[in-house]
Image (tube, rainbow, N blue to C red; front, top):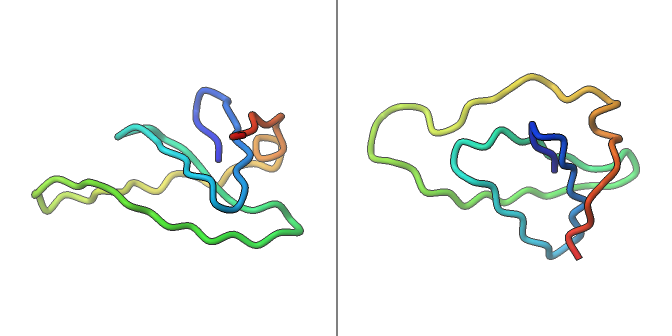
Length: 70
């Protein structure tokens, strides 16, 4: 998972990663791995979209040095 500030976190099975409301971030699996993504979120009561999808992440951004979660 990565964020606009350049931080890239390497998550492992069972890890929990939290993002602040409104934080733009990306996530995905390594080329030789599978990934399941479970999201729990608080939304407001409006009819406005709660998620904004951004552009695809470039390979060089995806391959940036990682910050381990452990």
